[in-house]
Length: 306
Image (cartoon, rainbow, N blue to C red):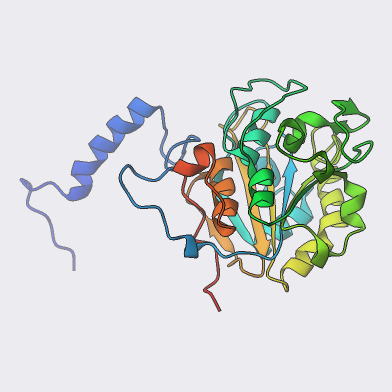
């Protein structure tokens, strides 16, 4: 049975919609579309979520890929493995990069700031706090593994498929050069002996920068599927994300979490690189650096504590 509202009493929806329309007009936001930066921070004056809301994985591996929008990855038949990971784990349907071009996005994820870098310049030299230095200071460990890095600790800007602009730990004066390792070292290390947190940076072909989505998907399956399976049984975590989109989708990118502590599903709350960094920092009791201090940690994807 339907009950009609009196004509002189507008419904709550009728009152809200005009206000929403004005807000959209002022922000340039179309219905169903969330620009990067909106809804990613704590509301003013609200308490931060409890640190206990983020579990502490034994190991975290972060893989950063390149220059593709969410819609060119999720549902793309040329990326069967990545889409399988998205079904297996937590897929963030409204994940955003923070800027263009590549380098400042890597810096944001690694240190909570772009440090006013607006290009893919090399070298960049920064005496600033960051994830690696904070992990080491707290008694944890960090290693960055870059495919095609010519030698451990190398500071070269470019060689073959290697590009230092995608390897942010090389930019910080307080990070030991010894943490900068070729990807062959990752492949040769048993998963149980990996550092607390690792970054994996494929070369310019396998990160989808110079080659196809299919090439990147095949490489990821060949080199990270073993770790993904292991993480699902050993309280560890794989994070797969992109630095930025191709400039066509408001920097909307795919981000996927896979691991034993992750509850599979699609999650629509907006996140960006600062939210991902804040989550890792909170997991290990680290200081919240730069913009990560004002962005909420990701708390909705975890299974209940056992």
